[in-house]
Length: 350
Image 1 (tube, one colour):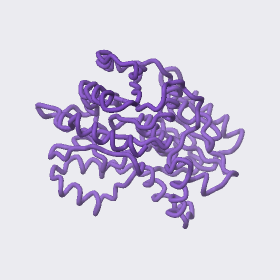
Image 2 (image 1 turned 45 degrees about the vertical axis):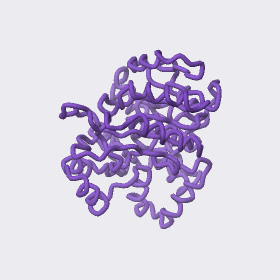
Image 3 (image 1 turned 180 degrees about the vertical axis):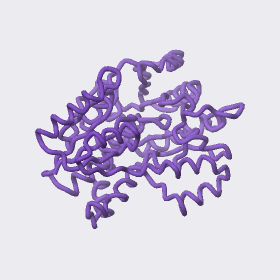
Image 4 (image 1 turned 30 degrees about the vertical axis):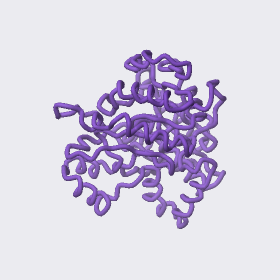
């Protein structure tokens, strides 16, 4: 059997879909061929993954839709695709399904309406009651498996999930092991970026947190962010030989290797934390305009989520929407000391 999985973005969501990959492999065995279509910038996440046979990248800036169809057609000629698994459920992935309409397809339920309604319910108590009793939003890593296990005749779905949790990293998600990136160990990764501005804890709070952690521990600390995250220059005021400033200095694979070897990742609701968990590294994750109830919070047993219960949140399903209040309370109300305390607790366990 040959299954084509489709998830173009974003980084964290692509990582979370490795739970589906691992489940399909455990269910259908090594006769299954798994191919994955994603944006070119995220190909590195799945290259050399032990359960993925082919990764197809699509560069929207340098390639046409015809180029992508040609790649998939070539793969289909080599080994016929039996099923398309649409894990993105957008117009783009719908177009892909239509282009290969002769191949059966399954589309994931992303709970868009449920998440939308949760942003409109401004009673914290009612919102939490409705999430548990009505919406049924659970961790994304388990949700897809539960939705589709009956279609695949997986009568052992829940047991199989527990078996995966007892794997090498006690995680449903996984990524390929990478060559070691040379850094003094042990170290903690500080990841201050996020896909949208309003999902970021203030950078000055991250700077203050790092200064206090340097004083309280003997760990090394690594600042990890992308080439466009120049706001991280704020960390340059810290003078310490235990602080390693790598913003914009690493490739995605190098960043993955750094996270793999860390003892803890501290960051916003972003892909960095999901990568860390896929390597079995615990996370301290800060939530602002979005909500852990959406199902995208880090799910590891040792991970910690910090999120303030405010009448105005969640204000959007992705965190892209601008804050309508005079201050960014959902992030500013998270104090440096409470984050530091959680980091120290998790670091001791790690």
